[in-house]
Amino acid sequence: MRSNLEEEPASSAKPIFQCSYDFPTDADEYLTIDSQDKLTRTRSWSSRLWLVPDMHQLQRQLLDEQAGNAIQLVGCEFDGGITMYPYHEKVQPHYDYFASTVKTKDDLESIRIANFFLPPGSYFEDTILPLLDRSKNTLETLELSNCGLSKDNI
Image (cartoon, rainbow, N blue to C red; front, side):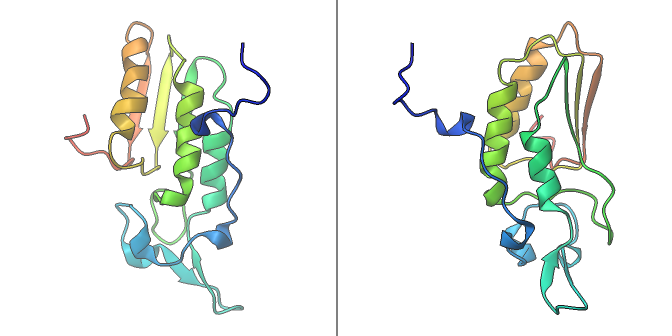
């Protein structure tokens, strides 16, 4: 039994929301398949650059409980020709939290990830592939679309 004084592992602690204004407006800091020049836009009333995709919405989906026998991360339609939530290192704790909440799931019937640029490196291999393996006899729906995966990831 764990004492109350022990800290939770960092990946299972629920991260806080980052305000959309806290994200850099330099498009080069994001991983995406979208054109870098479409990622930021100037607000006419403030002359301030802002990120086109709502990063608050991305964080909310990663922190929401994945209930039942389905996992779903599906981005909505975006303005200005953007097709996905880009990846930025500021949301890595949110992706880590998501991974910690789904790592024990098995017998899933549906996995849908669309319009989210998944973190680089071994995130797909370490997080998503084990879900597929544990659900190979029950999985009915698998959608991995527009999520930045290359043939080398699969």
